[in-house]
Image 1 (cartoon, rainbow, N blue to C red):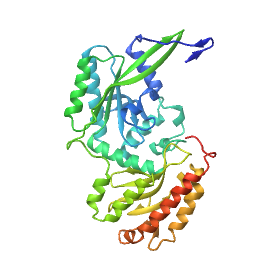
Image 2 (image 1 turned 90 degrees about the horizontal axis):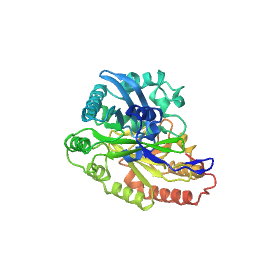
Image 3 (image 1 turned 120 degrees about the vertical axis):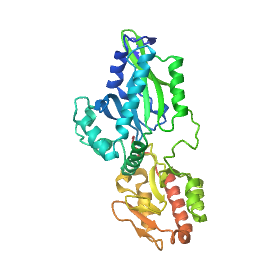
Image 4 (image 1 turned 45 degrees about the vertical axis):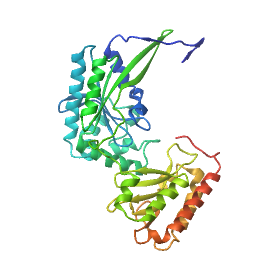
Length: 370
């Protein structure tokens, strides 16, 4: 940071109290290092000093993937204060776990936050989770669908992100969090230290994760998303293996959900690539897309102007592929059912290749920031 006479040198100082840091984080929740928690993008605040059955939760957030983050502040320096914060987190987790799904979570928790005095001004006009998540630069329709699916799963299992925030943690406190992470089937425990920096009559604050779950996986850890291996094991058809191989060879991206995946194309317009195809196990679908579906969500396409012409042409060519069925609803897309896809896969792969070539040749000058 710079001042009027040049760069300002900041030095870490002890805060006057834990309450000072609590106030800072409540007022500036973007200080939470979402990336260090394993999330892409900032967290969406859905509760701030919001009353639950067991008390008022300091901060309640959602990731764009539908993970629930519960934040409690350690209000004193001693170990009993830390144990109290952990106990409060677990109590709040049990309160949320009793909710029957994302709709009850929205109506019983998020609505009250949006109507309350502590709501972020950017959400003043929002009355529901859907409206808050639809603010400019937030979630598109497909991401919203994925969020609600995952949120339902998280609420059912209690697989929450439990975060204790404080100025300092002792080694014993870190060991306690590590123990919980290694022995608890559901739930992940993080410790975040908030740092005050002073310099030339100015203050700044930062936050860092000092204790997090290990990255190991095991049979007791819940699996929230399908994988290519899972998908191929459920469908004994080599055509789908070729689809995955072609997708990888073309440099397209596969993003997995519980019953399938979306095929995404990187563009100069946004950090997040755009979906141009979906595949699902039997019973899985999104907005009319099912089995193997290629096409685009017109609402999302508006955010990717540099490739709009190429993708629109791709969609028109899909309609000429024998056996395809147009989706019903908002998608400009075509479904290829299991008895059709193997016979037309070669033509579809060629169209994917043509789209990738056209997209790569699109000028980047029309790119817009996210």
